[in-house]
Image 1 (cartoon, rainbow, N blue to C red):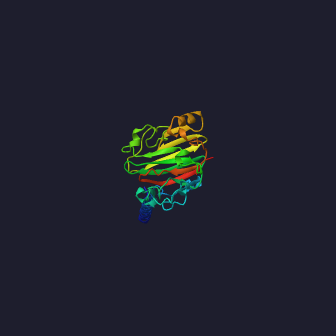
Image 2: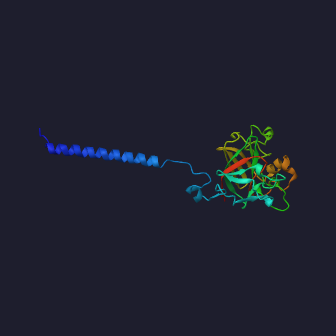
Length: 262
């Protein structure tokens, strides 16, 4: 049996210790890197790199209403304010006849096939709505004379919640949403409206709640049975503006973004 020299054994031990130290140092570095770069959701009112690459447009940056104006400019819209990163309707800011300063906000641009995302919350017993395909024309008096609406509502306290097809997430007065998963007043809800090639889909808090075809015989029959039957322009257009409704109650919107679809 041969014995290894003592010097050689010491060299092997020293090399093993160095290897362990390097491995421990590498693991610690990995842990530090992971701790310094956690996976976090994007900031409010911003677009991720992927969203930008996919053609999303931010309609509200948290501070400016530059992408919006009051329908037919019937007021200066001063009751709509950018507050804490949200587009907020403050009815207390309306003046005199309670209409000066308010009014429905509409986008400066029109959209045809689109995917809209936003978040909303209402005050207790609050009511508002998100409309689309709104036409701005001297002959058209109100946004809801043309634009279908996703209902925004406090289901627990507003009287409209007692009416079928008037609850949060409904295609207002046309189709009830299912499942019903709107969050209570004061909490944020995530909403999506997708309109493409006559197919309309609503999502609320991650669940599909409404889907239907537009502009076919069934669409016209639904309108004929609804409160909108007196306006022949309602639901008739294939392009128009997005609108946020001033229903006289405090409401907040944020993370408003849209993507044009082919």
